[in-house]
Image 1: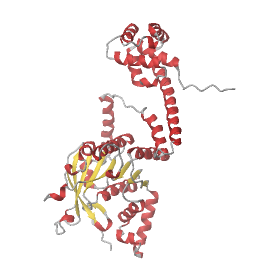
Image 2 (image 1 turned 180 degrees about the horizontal axis):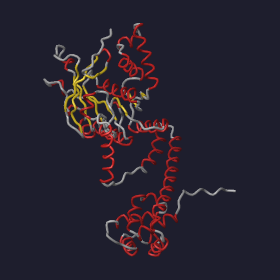
Image 3 (image 1 turned 90 degrees about the horizontal axis):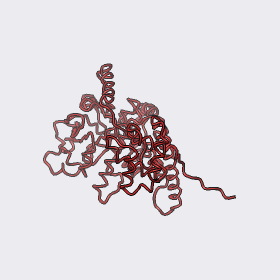
Length: 444
């Protein structure tokens, strides 16, 4: 016996009650327009009626006759079942206060249909053996795109928003020394920035050998080890062991040269074991995937957040120009990547540090200090970033400088604060930064 094909999930009665309520009551109309979209309706006639209600929403008042008149003018009245069907919708909507429940049912059925469509697309993709796409990444994109469409923020009154600000004030009164954002571990930088803020895109940029990757990794390491934060590093240039070796040098004080050669003096091995214990307890994770796309980065973070069941506190991408994007030229690609990184910071509500290259502009100037205009493909990057830190070490250009071992972190842009300069100690043999006032032991 032939099995009847399954029909897509839907609840036409709920759709009818929802539309009828929206026609009858202006409050129900506003709530319905917020909770569902046109594509959430299964019946095409209901989609057409919904579009008409969207168009009529700016009127102070309307009724079923006005809806009928609009549909007639657009030549759509017959397609929805005529004036009789509109009248039927109104008659079925006896409880307009239940509009939220009707909308929830309609939306839930819509999600099920979208998941079925996504699953079908995934199955088809798996049969396309010559597509060249990563089938797992494609599947993740399709499934997550369904959930992504559900997350819509709405308007909030300034009174409600002020309550969040009031909470910040209370926390400050309880601990005036506390920062609003995530500590970088560098006192002067934290004082200038009030920490790294949730949802912010932070750009760390510099010419080669200035220490831009080192600074980003130092901040990540301090957040994970000293503050017990969940930190993810995506290293597109260095492999995991290279990143780890730098971290060991910073934490242990054993020179990078000794760590790379594995010729570590016996008296320094104790510091290595102490570092091992610190790292065992740290919530710091490294991914070395090269040529990462925004979609892949987002999916990796979503999967990781699901696995640990906790928020991600900091993301580091090293570095931006090694990510892959789409566009007719590199500038368009970088623009898309930059916007994508900002969107990821907002989605995960955590600071995202992106390391970036600078153009050769500083090399042609007498003063080698970098400027915002030196950012490669700078337009979009400069616009999207909330905080831009540019690195400069005078010792690199002038070995006889009056400030050897000093690095300048130029705060070239800060959306919620002032620009300025912060000085840090550069510890070359450790490839690491420290607070300028700290006395650093010099290990051989």
